[in-house]
Length: 79
Image 1 (cartoon, rainbow, N blue to C red):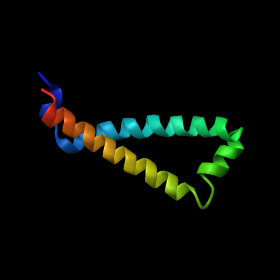
Image 2 (cartoon, rainbow, N blue to C red):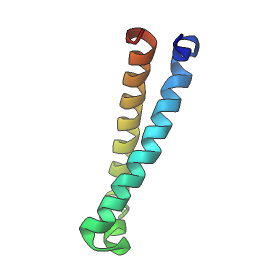
Image 3 (cartoon, rainbow, N blue to C red):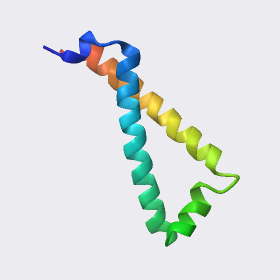
Image 4 (cartoon, rainbow, N blue to C red):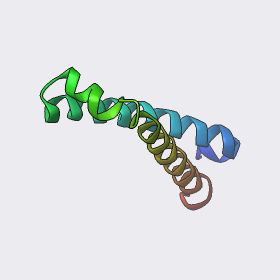
C-alpha cells in the first residue's frame, strides 16, 4: 500500500520541497564555485547585494513547484 496516500498534501509538499531545496541549493553552489574559480567568485555571483534575492526566490519557487508536483503524483496518480 502507498504510504503517501494517508498523509496530508501540505506535509508531503513540505517534505519533498525541503529535500529538493537543500539538494539543489548545495549542487548549485558547488557548480558555481567551480565555474567562477573559487568561493569569492561564487559569493559575488550568487550572494552579492543585487543577486541574492533573485537566487533565494528562484530556489523557493522551484522547491514549491517540485514539492507540489511530486505530492500530486504520489497522492493521486501512482497506484
